[in-house]
Image 1 (cartoon, rainbow, N blue to C red):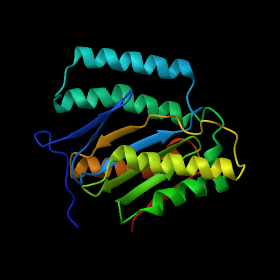
Image 2: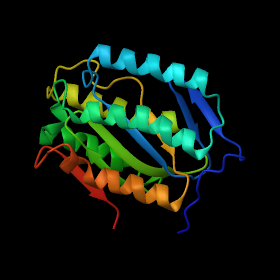
Image 3: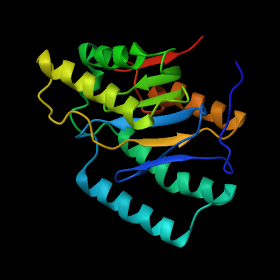
Length: 204
């Protein structure tokens, strides 16, 4: 099956809460969502403030150098903070992680197609592509809303809210970008120094 990649001149469906979210046809998307207590408040506030200043000083659209600079300053910085393992980190517990995993697979090959994911102790990275008629916010709401409901219903965790409301996403731009993201997901547990307490899955 051929893979479509992000076309900056093509039509983009945009939604926004505190963060912007883009989707374009069946272009693969790399999504990160995290537990509500996964980052200290001061880290998040500083990240948002510095990010907004970057947007002001570097209006979009960006060239490749500016985009690489942005992700080096903000995406990578956030991932490093998550890998530090702040908060309750209850996704390291198999009964909780398995509920999240089940939700990821629930509509696989129906509403979307999973490529790979890793469930880390306090966050989740997913690489997937959606059917054209599907909505990125709706899919994320299904994963997060249903999993948190099952977790609370079974008395597995009293963290409420369970998930941080927002999530981070990025459309895949090229075969090289696809491989970079796939490798990042694959290597994330080792990068964070984990030998257990995670679930890594890749489509064969």
